[in-house]
Length: 587
Image (cartoon, rainbow, N blue to C red; front, side, top):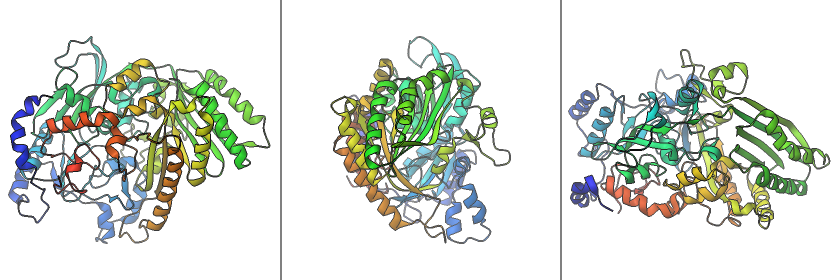
């Protein structure tokens, strides 16, 4: 692979490879005068960072910890606070810690100034948009933070053509890196009447999701969010602003589509394809209690048979959950069907459950809802359908700050354990389905699990699968019917915060139970791969799990655009060369 415009830097890589990063108090840490100059370079948008949690743990006078703890379940409060992250930590893995300084970037030139300053002064650099990383990659103590929250402009295009390309014009939307998906859906769908493939959780940042691959509720219809990327503006490690697309910097462009956020550069602006909006979006919910282990095992088998025959197609997404108390929950969404059509799809399954009252009872009866797709994310839907959406209740909060009630549990969570694995569609074949049902049942004895059927592309249109194949994500996702997720978390806690410290022993027990459950699934899917955005912090073979055969190509892109390793995130491309905290060269 040609090094292209980065060739001149390769001669300096060997020297830089021996250098480690500096912390406050170390020789080489920038002087007050140097920090002041950076502040002037970014228009005064540089400031030291404090976490309100560390202030509470230290009993800092004047800190209202009661009010803080009440605010932590609001994902928009977390996102608007520079010293906080959406997840507060992972027991035995990481704890949310503030950077030394943050540049609250409003323009691409602010990002350029911060990148140059970090490179020239050997600083640990962190990038945060939405701050949703389970791996802790959007925070690091003693670092310089580039905070893109204020870069949130959204621009619609009726006839977009990527720079340097001669493709036919198409409908698109350009989004700055700090925008949240709630804002994008309001612009593209509620006001614009189109659809952009994005995340299901509305407070997730756009740039991070695109770079992780990007599954949303309707991925089975529209494919990966990263596959809809048409062009990106990115600041690379040399401080140069580059426009990456299929015609200019194609390898960097490919790497940004699923190669992981924070490893290849700072994405400042993305342009995404806008799809036609279907007439309807809807949801199907029900909860079924089985009377015995044997009945539950049969119910799991019935569900798999029904899914394989009726639901593995572009209409359906979201979750089928199996619980250890012999409960099966359906929490699915659909697109392009009327309420009557969706109910007709499910009626055979509902009838089969109803016909066996000694074995099964509906703890919550089947509920099928449908509404015009253009109103699906509208704040007015929150007002009309009480409980379907929740709002940011802070005084003066934007009307677009809405979120799904089911996602509120993630706000300020402390993870105890988390694993994911793609389930190949081949396991749904007649000669394999019983083995899969047995494995799912056995796993549920150890810990509950969710099958996210929208996070496996088997059953999607051929065009969506072909587009996903041209991304960096593990190709296992293309042949999977679902991503199974096993997770455990605790309420907002923080080390040293009296009365609100993590329960370490409980967390370790739960992590062990999750590991036992995953071992059962590995009996039928021994090398399934894992989705990097929703994965085990301690994944031993993360290169293979996250990217499979695509990892060597990603390594080549990393060497091309960042040979000195300025950009580091836990289990990111090239992170093998650094200590776990990203400060010391080890290879």
